Image (cartoon, rainbow, N blue to C red; front, side, top):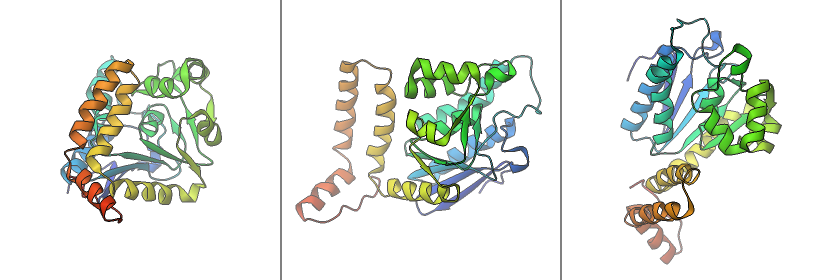
Length: 257
């Protein structure tokens, strides 16, 4: 097991939980944290996790970039070196990702929070696309994640004005999946993750990527993607198990193969 400084890694059954662990800095994203977050995701894959939960320690999920860190002359290089490898790893995961937003999510922290396939948010939390407030532009995929969920008009409002969006509003807008009492965030997220981990893992991985492609492809291309994925899913052991379970009137026991 790796010895992390800024994240925590834990496994419970087939679910791996990765916790942003700089509560004294409101889990602000440092270069070290991005490196370790990427390593933790790689470890989860190597461990054979069938679902991943991403959360934060303390009262914030993530306050965004650590503005007290070492700034470079070209912030685009920082994105290329540290941010993009992690957010592309999250997007390319072969297993479902649940984000447990235990507190406010600002800046790139909002990007990480919305990266979940299922997003569980505490009722006192908020989202803040804070970039314009410090003279920067949205990054870590925030533009894509927000615009694909809530459209041009609402995304521009959030990005240009830099105002907080409360949990109930985020749910109504379609940015998060569920809003629960603050003390119930992890329990709800873990329940969803364990449910997903007990499912047909290969098919679920294809579903998450298929939906992402559907957001950018035309209809006929989407049909081709569905066809290719269905051919692959139809050859899995989990599909064979589902057919046998149906024939014998029992609940299927998926193994992720």
